[in-house]
Length: 331
Image (cartoon, rainbow, N blue to C red; front, side):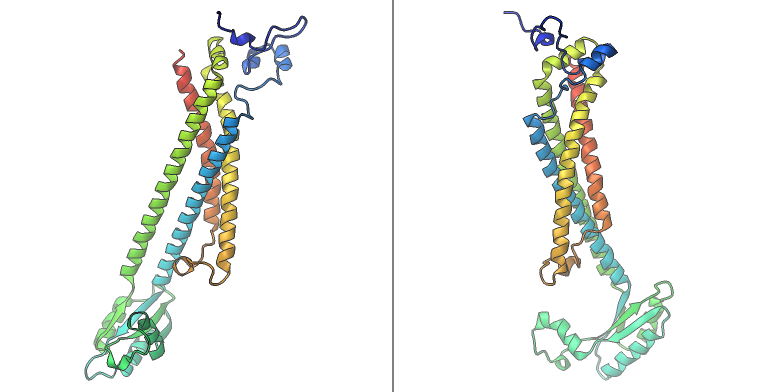
């Protein structure tokens, strides 16, 4: 039995009617015939079941990618806020010593701190405030007089360039026995390292999500090629350029990728809005103590918009590359 001719798969035309042209071939016809075939089906049917499934897959991947970008944005903003808060405050510790009046030594430390340029509020923690700091470890009802608990002085830095912490430490060591200055450098370094690790982990997850999406597009493109193999081969053998055929697939998957990416981005933005709303209600946000707020900044929303662009471009480029590799095997 002779194999069917793909050029005649629409059947023999009736007398006086134009013959059916395979999808995509109309572009190679003369202008008068091209207009007659302008409404023909494209190479890849836009309403195929595989296309709808791919839109759903891309939407899910886009949603996960957008959530990752939002989480990275929250961590980065929280880390920047932590470091800013730490840089604006130093702590003076006045340790108890035999023969030294702890209250007088604390008052002297306060005077020296207030005399330093670039300093704002200086506050010596009261006995009750100090007891509140040690209660999580020692329990309630602690007798601070019976324990060698240092007195703490909180110093607000309003001008870091004018504030000379080294001079303050030297003056305290000379005037107040047992006093020291803690500028929280070690804590700042740990927070910076934690934030960097979290951001790099988020970017790694984002890369994995995009890679999984690219593989899904490759499989979908191969399925579309398999279902339209005859048309693609006819176009190729009658002289259609490979870039033209690849562009037809690229346009189809451009629409698919854009639909999926927008759906995922809208769902992610709605999730961010719900989290911000929940965080605005006191006591309902379990991450408030760690991150302060889960509201996504403008940077996070710009990142989601960038995800839409990246997903769309990646979907289009991946499909075109898959088609071009298939066409290379027909040469």
